[in-house]
Length: 213
View 1 (cartoon, one colour):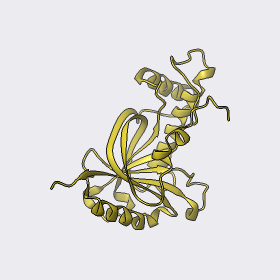
View 2: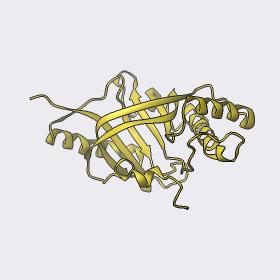
View 3: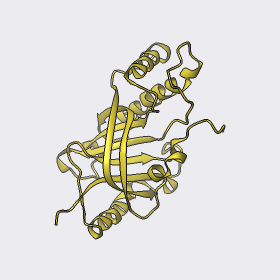
View 4: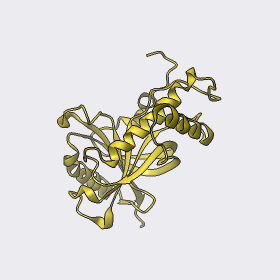
C-alpha cells in the first residue's frame, strides 16, 4: 500500500485498536454513511445484511470517484474504514432477543465528502449498481466521553467484556450515559461473515459521564 493512502485504523489507533482492558476516550465529531433498521442482525436476507450492502456500495463509489469524470474537490485515496453499529433495545428487552434490536449501521466517511458528494454517490449506486439507496443517510456524530475496550471472541460473549467496562466505570467515578441520543457502539474489525467467531475483534464503546460529587 502506498504511503499516500489514508488508513483510519492506523492513523487513529486510539479509536480503532484499543487494549483488551477498558479505558476512557474522548471521541470527536465524524461523518458517516448510515442506514437505520431493526431486528436480528443474524437473520439471513434480513435488514442488517441489506444495510451493509448499501453502505459498502456507496463507500466504494466514493472511493473510486478518483477515476470518474468529476473528482471531488480535496479528494484523497483511503482505505474504506470498518463497519460500525450503534445499538439500542426496544423497551429494555432481553438482550438475548435480538428481534428487539434497533440499530444504525455506519461506515466512516473521509473528510472531503459533503452532502452534495454523498448524494451524487447515492444516485450513481442506483443507476450503475441497481441498488436502492433510499435508506442511506449522511450523518455527523460526536460521541464525546466514552469507555471502550477490545472484545475478542463471539458477539454472544460480549456481556463479560461489558461487565469489565462497568467495573472500570465504577472505579473511575463514571456513569453509563446511554440515552436517546447516545448509544452503545461497536466497531467490527473482523469480517464476521468469514472469520471464526473465536477470533472476532470488536471495539465496544459505551458513552459515559462523570458522577457528581
